[in-house]
Length: 78
Image 1 (tube, rainbow, N blue to C red):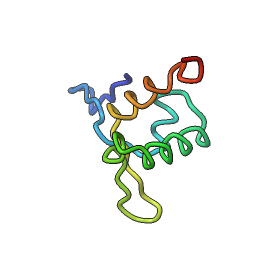
Image 2: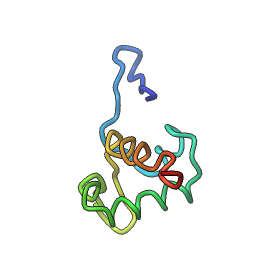
Image 3: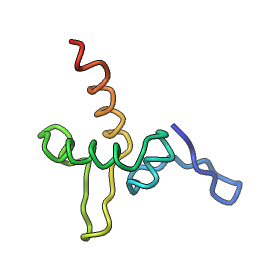
């Protein structure tokens, strides 16, 4: 996971990020990130990972997003 350097003093790993930042962290398109967020909202295990603060501000837990991606890995082949 990519760490954010704050004023060259500390390495900080983000806990909650906006979908736009997920596109940078995971090198995914905005459309795919939106699709995964909608899937997470429908899944009982990952619903708490998505927080909609307002109609245009959504925050996603990075660790749970990674777990969701891992659960999707090769799921069609099992």
